[in-house]
Image (tube, rainbow, N blue to C red; front, side):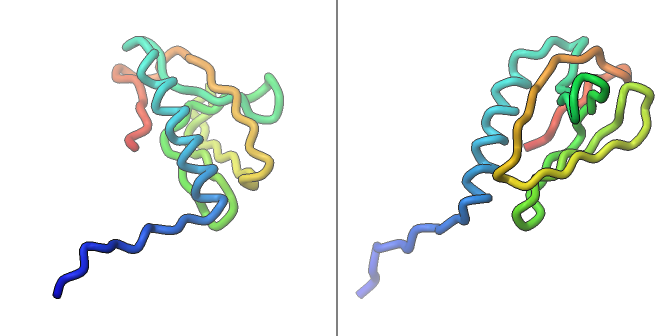
Length: 101
């Protein structure tokens, strides 16, 4: 006899927090024009990161991208401390960056 019962996939609290952040970033990206891309304000108004990638590393949320001058930038925050201000920033290349979720 074959059982139709499936064991649910259990996620950790950081995974649930990360999934919620991904959904919010997806929603934000849908509102962007072809002339803008998603940026996050990191450590106050002095640094904006044009985000290329977002990942979960253990309990840390990692944002990778470049700053406004094209230098590599990475922001790492514990999932309990994540506080993200998303902003539409002018694209830096011909094609705007989009985070591929």
